[in-house]
Amino acid sequence: MTISSAPGKVYLFGEHAVVYGEPAVPCAIERRATVTVERRSDNHIRVEARDLSLDGFTVEYTGDTEHRPDVDVPTALVDAAMGYVDAAVEQARDAADMPDAGFDIIVESDIPLGAGLGSSAAVVVAGIDAATRELNTPLDCREVARRAYNAEYDVQDGQASRADTFCSAMGGVVYVEGDECRRMTAPNLPFVIGFDGGAGDTGELVAGVRRLRSEYDFAAKTVGSIGEIVRQGETLLQNANPETTPGQALLTELGQFMDFDHGLLEALGVSSRTLDNMVWAAREAGAYGAKLTGAGGGGCIVALDETPETETALEYTAECHDVFRAELDRTGVRVEEN
Ligand code: MEV
Figure 1 (cartoon, rainbow, N blue to C red):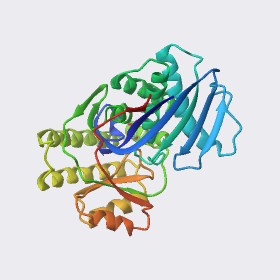
Figure 2: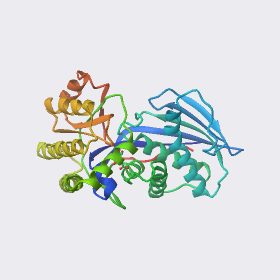
Figure 3: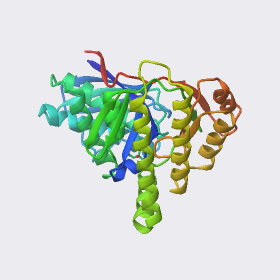
């Protein structure tokens, strides 16, 4: 039996624009998905999803996605969770050159599904790591990231960047621009996350931005402006001392860039009333800046505030279902038990 875990993430800047080759800076956070994998003697896959912010379910099938099981939960939920697990299994089988390997898999996660915190990337990354180790073919983090990207790309019909999967595999703060993916040095930022209890449909939201961008020059320029924000934000972070607590000047400027980024994402149609209300609650409470994180449409916002004010304000915001502080997680995928 092998157990691996991988972190979720928030986007400091750059979601959506990163799909078109602009840069993004996602940051891994200390909320993890954990995947337990045990080799079976047949070619079946049995998956138990214990907590994906949905009711747990258990399914067993022959490892062939054509033959989906009959289970008593809505098909869309099973498809959403299983699609990523299937894709991770396929990548592990391919890496080990064992196309018929069967597994018992348990997925546990404290990252809400589809809420902009990189739950699917974390499940895919941890799943590939655990399954390849179980097949005695351990991969290095970069190869796990590469294969996890391939898996997400397949599940999301090509509408995926390398950002989520690279960040989850490597941990810390990363910079992604097209195929260029690298870790950055950065200080620990005082992230506060507000969650509206909902989720967005990444595929639909990405497709909406793609349509706007190809139809209107101003929308294409908006995407380019997000890239500009990311480049300037990256320079700020590179010049900061990673060993010390970030000072007010840095936080003020980063916060201003986050506000700007949120405004452009809103213009591109990927925010929502609940996300906007949480963003405004955070700003009014004195956060340095606040923006949606991930695909949008619902889910989470991220704010910067080292005081308790933003947390308190979000607790009293009707649209906010949950609020928590998130520490930067400098460890990416890791094996918990082998
Ligand atoms: C989703 O977490 C982030 C998007 O930029 C899509 C992607 O990068 O694959 C919207």
